[in-house]
Length: 141
Image 1: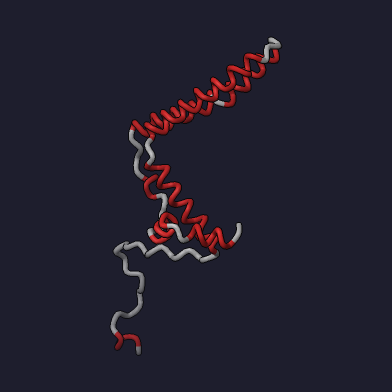
Image 2 (image 1 turned 180 degrees about the vertical axis):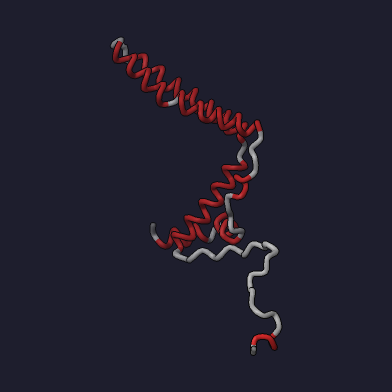
């Protein structure tokens, strides 16, 4: 990718915010709602009625030697598959798509820019990490 294009992309507010906020996939840790599960199932259904149905129509059209079957049925099935996908996306919501795209943008731009990603902040565990002496006078012993 040309460096000028990469720099131009890096200057956009979306990319700058994704990198500055350290966009991650933590939203995927929470349990999905029944609505989201339903939407994802509908999206899965759209894939099964998409190209496999068009391929089946193609095979049927070859078997019956009627090309009009796939010529008309193919675009109809593709359109139906697309509408099914859109309904599934509506029910699943855009939340997970936004989270994934921000994370993907951050990771891709950090790699394209060649900058090492900044270290994640340490997680507070409540356990003291240094086991050495806590007072300066004890260090001399």
